[in-house]
Structure formats: C-alpha cells, structure tokens
Amino acid sequence: MLSTIKGLIRCEEERDGKEKWMGKKRRGDGCWNEKRNRLYRNRKELLLVVSFNIRVCLMYVPLMGFSNFMVYYWMSRYLESTWFIWVSQMNHIPMNIDYDKNKDWVSTQLHATCNVNQSLFNDWFTGHLNFQIEHHLFPTMPRHNYWKAAPLVKALCDKHGIEYKSKTLLGAFVDILHSLKESGEHWLEAYLHG
Image 1: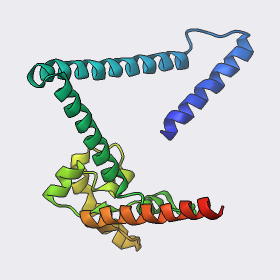
Image 2 (image 1 turned 60 degrees about the vertical axis):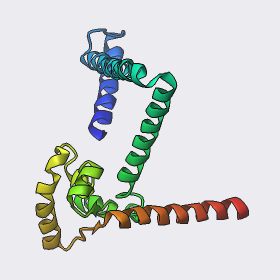
Image 3 (image 1 turned 180 degrees about the vertical axis):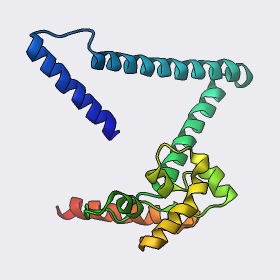
C-alpha cells in the first residue's frame, strides 16, 4: 500500500516536472499508462464479479424461485461479511495500540496483533488468518503456509525477548466483546457529559 502511494506520488511529481519543462501534458507518459492499465484491470475484475453474480442467479433462480433466491443470497452475504469482521478483528481490536511507541517494525507488528491457537477447526474457520502475526510480518506469503513460519517467528521472539501472543478462538471473540463494551462506554460518557 505504502509503495503504491509512493509510486503514485512519484508519478505525479514526474508528470508535474515534465509539464513545467515541456509546457504541456504528454499522453505517452509511463505513469499515465500505468494508471490506465490499473483502471482497465479494475474494470476487468468488476466484470468478473458481475458475471459471477449473473451465473449464480441463472443457476439458483430456476431451482429456488426469485424471492427464495434473494433471501438466500442476502443471508449468505450477511453471514459472510459478519464472519469476515469477526475473524479479521479478533486479532486487532483487543490489542493495546493507542499510540506509537517508536519501536522497530517487527516489534510494532508483534505488539499490534496476536494469533489464535492453531487447530484444524481454527485454520479452516479463519481461513488461516488465525496466524495474524505471520500475516503482518509476511503479507505476501500464501496463507496456507503461515503455520510453517509460525515456529520460526516464535523462536525469534523468544531469542529477543519479544512477547508472542496467542489465545483461544473463544477468548479472542470474548476480547472483541470486552473492547466493544469499553469503547461504547467511552462514547456514552462523551455523549452524556461531553
């Protein structure tokens, strides 16, 4: 994300410099081509999503009827989004990351997140996002390989005295509820007495 932002800033700076030097905008500029290609890829991805939804409709509407299909479709979308919120936030929300403590990058990643204990169910249910520490340290690594990196990261943490946090799935969900309750109390206090 940061490299993409830096790249876009660099493109804009190059474009501005060329415009000042040449006195006009060049259409063959490489950065503009990159942006056009990125827009094309986004359009192509959107078309894939739309075509997938159309295929799902064509497959299920004759079997279920339109109204039953709509109930099924929106219920599955709701469950999927709710699942994603719980799974992605169980490793982040409960962590104490109020302000930057000027630590190195690895220590900051380990302080900002935690893992959920590994089991076949947890790996399946979370889609291997129960290895959130490894996900933060190696974001481009395929998720199904996080369990291989976990013992190495844990050994590195033990060697340098950094806490490697891991908890149960139920404990992670309870922590979300506690942090939401605490946040709600702060908002209520600000609303009533602010």
